[in-house]
Image (cartoon, rainbow, N blue to C red; front, side, top):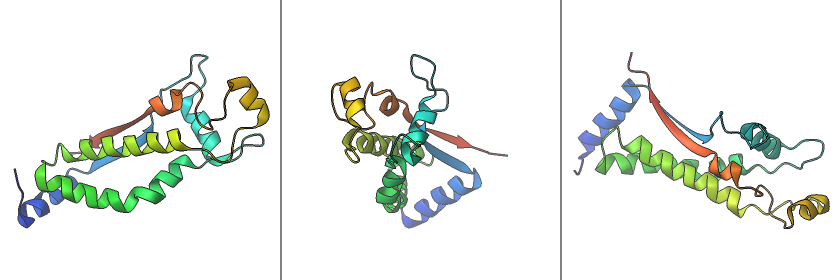
Length: 142
């Protein structure tokens, strides 16, 4: 279904009227096997702690892709309805966040962490954090 400029405007208006919200990131309920919060580990890595240097994977993903996300939603609405387009964009954002995690390399892990893990791959050990990346679309139609 190809949308005209008028159809695109209607779809954008519907998203705004329905107050559609797309969130992408770590799902709050995700935990490691020992019960530790994946979101807390991600936060500690994003901003750093006294023993972990900052690895701002989330902010980097946003900085590198936010302009494209605006264009993507417009392009998606040209060929998809207002219910489907946000989900497709969410999947795309999820993939970009996972790609950033999987490609992160600097700063490297500390020698003690490398010895414990057996390899140097910041943000990647069990891959639990990458698997916890997801998206949700909600709408307040009141």
